[in-house]
Each structure stands twice: as structure tokens, then as C-alpha cells.
Amino acid sequence: MPLLQVKNLTKRFGGLKAVNNVSFDIQAGEIVGLIGPNGAGKTTLFNLISGILHPEEGHIILDGQPLNQLSPPRRSLAGLGRTFQVVRPFAMTVLENVMVPLLARDPHMDKARDSAMQMLALLRLEHLADAQPDSLTLAQRKRIEVARALATRPKLLMLDEVLAGLNPTEISENLPIIRQVHEQGVTIFIIEHLMDALMAVSQRVLVMELGALIASGTPQEVTSNECVIKAYLGEETPTC
Amino acid sequence: MSAKRLQLLGGVLFAAIIAVPAFVESRFILHMVTLIFFYIAMTSAWNIPVFGGKMSLGHAAFFGLGGYTGAILYVKFGVSPWIGAAAGVAVSLLGGVVMTLPLLRLRGPFFTLASIAFAEVLRMIAIDWRSLTNGSVGLNIPFKPGWANLTFQSGKPFYFLSLILAVAVVFVAYRLRHSALGFHLRASASNDEAAQALGVDTRRAHFIALLWSSGLTGLIGVFYVFFIYVVEPSTMFSLTLFSLQPALNGIIGGIGTIWGPVIGAIVMTPFGEYLRFYLGTIQQGLNYVVYGVVLILTVNFIPGGIVSLVRPKRSNRSDGSGSSSDTKEAR
Image 1 (cartoon, rainbow over the protein chains, first blue to last red):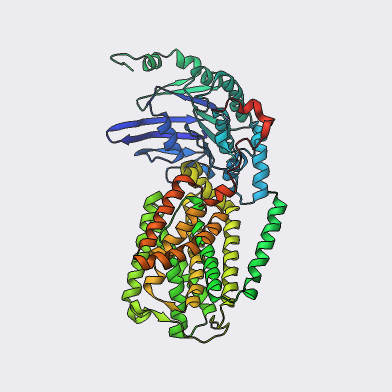
Image 2 (cartoon, chains in turn purple, orange):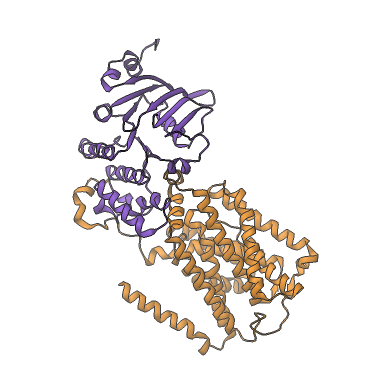
């Protein structure tokens, strides 16, 4: 059974179908990339899966459990983790930021502090434990975002542009972290604008355009797919 | 100042506070300090939901519910104020549930505005339900001194009772802020969507915070009624005295912190009484004009309140040079 099943998901904003009849599966242990031009509906899809938005139609099933009726915090407890494209850490220390999800599961302060410290070590942030996030670089704040999401011990981790806006050095620092998280046994679903980076980590790539899923396959298959090339380069009368 | 010296200073200050009634005979000063203690308790209780960014301007509702419950039980049914205090807490908790459930859907200023209406509605009910509340005349607490009746000849017992209340409420607020609930509230205040995505049931957190706040405010209300010997709608459900004043104390002292409400109440209570006494006689309401100016100045120039001046926000470079390689490209 797939870890995540998305069936015929549709979300309308007024007359616009932001997500149009999208279906796909993600198997446990995969790293799946999601690409598409601006406005293709990638973040909307993430918001539907994490429960911030409600679909008009379709089903979302995580590890056999239907998510449609669950609130965002319940989905998190069910094993769904996510980061946000615009990182806004909580106004508290880095360590406390990571303690928040832990305390939502077990209110013991000391235990949460220890586990949070471990999580920071994993993401090479332990020396910043007592720093205020607003004093850190974007790359570091994105790592806090990942640390926080990872502290929920998700079955599926959805990463929304954790590399966008970083310089090449920072990307080369943050990219291995995604692999490292994956090696911990976490299945990853990742949106990324930076094609090179995405292709480097993903085993499989889904492509969206105008709310619809237009292609799916290995990075090589997808980049040579005509529809995908058209979606990115544009064509006057799309045939896909 | 080192933590040890701060502790010592705190200890000395506390000893002085306890010793005050032994030396001070002035009823005025005792009354004023008692009032400060009441406001410390009230502001700290009001401040609990503010950890999560929910600012109420309707806390007079809980204050009045508690006070009226204690007074009605005592005056009409001869129930001891100590039992009345428990009943007062129960009724204000009920009020907290009724106010909170529909209001939790509202964010920011909308929550604040709706909370005002809640206290005003209760004030109207207190005026109209004459058989129970004696209308706008209110109920007087008969003067029968004794601990059982929570009525005293001297001002000293209430000095200590209000001090205990203040310490207790500040302690509860402190414990809550440093508990899992406190983390959830602070997380929700800075980014509710992210907090929810991390598994925090933020609505539940706000609800629990408001229950603590309303219950404690009701308890304070009961003691306050026996302190002033009377309940009447325009005092107990007063927008300015018990809804705006705690908020004002909190904002000026520093909202969402533990010591902000304490400092705010210590500074604003004598200031408020002074203004009311002097300016109120020149032109009614003039004192509120000054309040407004002070509030605007505070929010503009020291948004973190007085407490942010005393204890500046933790340094951004708290990790020192150990991470220079990581922070040098800070943007």
C-alpha cells in the first residue's frame, strides 16, 4: 500500500481550478519531487494535503488513514510533516522552536529539550540553540524549519522550497541534509524551483501545470518529456 | 545586574512589602497598595491569553461574574464568601466558555472588539435582573467583621489577601508560560499556521488559556467585592476600570511577559488614581485623555513596554563568536 494516496483532488478559487483532478501515490521510502511553473498549484497541493485548504473533491489518504476530515494539527499527529515556503520561525530561541512540536506530543519539558537538542545536532544547528532565529541567515532559518518539521517524526515530510533563495554555497550545505533526513527513513515530497538540486535528490518527479498533473517519472524521463518542455518554455497552442 | 544580586534585591523588596502594614498607619497608603496588588493579579490573569496573542477588552465580564456570584450568595443566601469564591470561579469559568467558544474563530482585533460586547451585555443583564442583582443600586455587603465573612475593621487583612492573590496569579502565569501550553501559545502568536502544521492544537491552547484567565479573574472579583463592600453593575462590569485598565497596565508594562503586568500595575495604579482625583474634578473624562496620550506614546516609542527597557531583548549575537562562519552572511 502506498504511504500517500491522492485521488482526484480538486480545489477551486472562484472560477480558477488551482488543483484540477490530481491523482498520484507516494511509496514509503521515496523522495518525490514536484515541479512546475509559477502558479501551477504546487503549494496549493501542499496546503490541501496538510489541511490548510479544503478540497472541493477528492481524497487524501496517509498510511491507510483518510485525512480529509482531520484538522491540520491532527494530520501532523497522523504523521504528516511540512515546511513553509516563506519561513517565519516562532519568536523564541532556535531550541524552543524545535521544542514546540515535541511538546505537542509529550508535555515533558526536559524530554522535549533533549530531543530538540538531538534534532539540532542532526541539522548542524546545535551551536545556535540559544540564538533568536531573526538573527540568522536564511539558510539557517530554513534548516530550523526542517528541524521543526522533522521533530514531529513524520512518516511523510513535505518540503516547500527549502533551497530557494539560497546561494550556491548554502545550497551545497543544505542539500545533503535532505538526503540525510531521507536516510533516517523519512519519505520526502519536495517542491523546488531549482531544477538541478531537485533532479539531484529526487528518485521520481511529478510535474504540474495550471493545476493539473502533466507528467511523472524519473528525472531523466521528465526532462525529456515534450509536455514538460512546453510547459516551461511555452507554446502558443499547447497540445498537452 | 547578576542573577544573584537581582534575587537579593527581590528578597529585600519582598520583605519590605510584607513589613509595610506594621509601620504604615495611613489607610490611604494601605488602600493604594492593596489596589496595586489587586491590579497586579488582574493584569497578570488578563495577560495569560496574551501569551497566545489574544487580547481581551472584556475581562470585566469575568470580574463581575465572580464578584456578583460571591455577593449574591452571601447577601441573599448567607453563603460564606469562601464558598462563594469557589462558586465565583465556577461561574466565571462558565462565562469563559460561553465567551470563548464563539470568539475563538476571530483573530486579532476582531476577538478584542467582540470581547468588549460580552462584558457590556452582562452589565445590561446586571442592571435589568433586579430580583437577583438589585438593579443599578447593587448589593451592599453587611459590615460583620470576621474572617468567616471576609470583612475586616482594619485594612491590613486585605493588604495580605490581595498580596497573596497577586503572588499566586503571577506564579500561575509564570508556570503556564513555561509549560507546554505556554510554548503552544507563543508559537500560535508568532505563526499560527506553522504551529498547527507541527501538531499544535492552537484553538485548544487558546481556550485553556482563556479559561485560566477567566477563572482567576473571577476569583479576584470575589475578593474585590468584599474589599469594597459593594457590587453594582457600573463598577463591576466597568469597561474602563476592569476591562481597559488591565489591558493598559499590560501594554505599558510589557504584554506577554511575566513582569510586564506587575510593573504596569505598580506604575499605572497610583498614576490612574492621581489622574482621576485631580483631573477628574476639572473636567470629567480628562484623565482618560491623558491615558490615551500615555498609551499612544508607549506603543509608538517602547512597544515592548517598560519591561523591555529594564531587560533589553536578548542579544542577537547570543552565541558569540563561536558561529561567526554561520552568521557572517546574515541578511
